[in-house]
Length: 238
Image 1: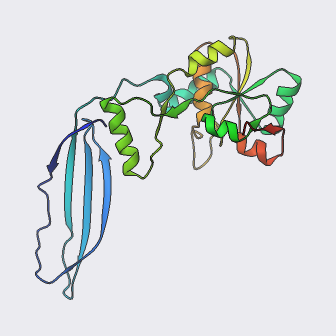
Image 2: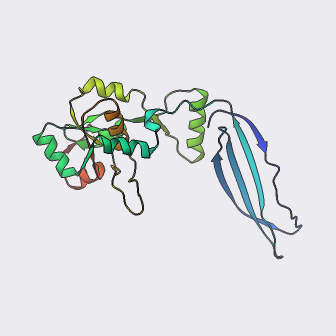
């Protein structure tokens, strides 16, 4: 997706026309195509006293003026990330075990949530380096992303923090003992519904850490939600 330069009507439409009808509520959907176009579809069901044989469909094809930047390591497929995390033996721990490791083994909890969430509440002694941040720039690509978020009613869209690893390396040496944490945690464990587990911000952070040579990386299973639920030590900056 990118900046919008043209809007083209799709010639496809219904084959039936009735003089006596009323329209039902519109259904709006969108699809991103391989050439970075955004396909918006508007559908309206037709109803009347007579039985109708078809539905109207109208489409708008929105062409892009900018190209999406090359994929970053954080955007790698989850399957690839999970394989490396398992290969590097990244261990998942629950909240109580994370607290014990922090207290007895000098582990540091790396809270990768947005700064605003960190300030509201975080584990005592945790370090905050957000892996995603609010979109800052105003390039054609960034404007298009803002528009895409706004289309779905989200007016505080986020992007990958390009300074994440630089900030990590300025705070921690490669031998540091780190527990990556976010709100929900995600999981590497397979299940019937999630045969490859579920990706999360903290697992993406753990992947970036081991990819950049960090050797003692753990992951908080269940996330900080369980930390706060268990009543473990926390603090705020407000």
